[in-house]
Structures are given as C-alpha cells and as structure tokens.
Image (cartoon, rainbow, N blue to C red; front, side, top):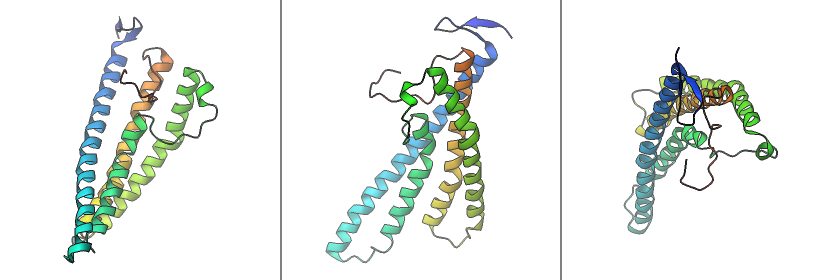
Length: 191
C-alpha cells in the first residue's frame, strides 16, 4: 500500500482512500433513494388529504381507501428515511454529555453504538421485515405491499448508514479522515 497526502495534508494509504470514496458512493445512494422516496410519498399524502376533504364535502365515496393509503405512505416514508436521518445526525439524541466530549470520544461512542446497537437492530428489523414481506400474499392490497417492503428495505438502508458511520469514524480515529460522523447539522450550508 502506498502512502499519499490528502487535501488536508494528512498521510493516508490508498486502500483507506478508496474505502472512503466507496463509503461516499454508498452515502450518495442512500441519500438518492431517500430523497426519491420522500418526494414519492409526501406528494401523494398531500393529494390524498385534499381528496379526503373534497370527499367529505362532495360525498364521492372514496374516503375509506384514502386514509389507509396515507397511513401506509407515511409508514413507508418514516422507515425508508431512518438511514438518511441518521447520516445527518437528525435523530433524537439524549445526550447531556455529548457536546462536552472531545471529537475522539464522540467517534468512539458512535462506533460502539453502531456496532452494538444500530447494526444488530437493523439486522433484526430487516429479518422480520423480510418475514412479513414473504407472508404477504398475492391478494394483498398495494398499501400492504408498500408497508411491508419498507419494513424490509428501510432497516437495510439504516444498516448501510451505520456502515458509513463505522468506516468514517474508524478512519477518523486512525487520522485519515477529518470529521466525526454523523455530521452534526448546525444550520450552515458549509460542509
């Protein structure tokens, strides 16, 4: 393995550099899927809400289907965006001490949390999501298929997000990556 300097002037091996690039591609895939799912669910939920209002006023007779579809789409959106939210540190964090810790301590705690909690949880949820999807019959409604598919694929995206965080924090602790992951959002647009 050859050593070379990155943009920050730190020496890193080429394999670590490729690993970080691969993780960047994985993060891009997670982000892309999440944005597509968000738009594909938010817009229909809004339209279904408008149709429900119109149905109440005009007595169209479709109000029994729309709430079920809206609820299923909301479930899909929530489950499919867990990984996206985690990568942006947008999840609820009960941390009285976190802001006072050094970056290295934060990286170690995040690494331990990913390995002991996030990845096993993602595996269990993905396994049971697969079980639920396989129990869905060919006669199930579209909203059932959507929800059960999200119950399987959402935890997979969350687990992949955990892999991104693990690789970046290991690289940070080894001195070959400059930031602790997940990145805390401060409201600025600068990376």
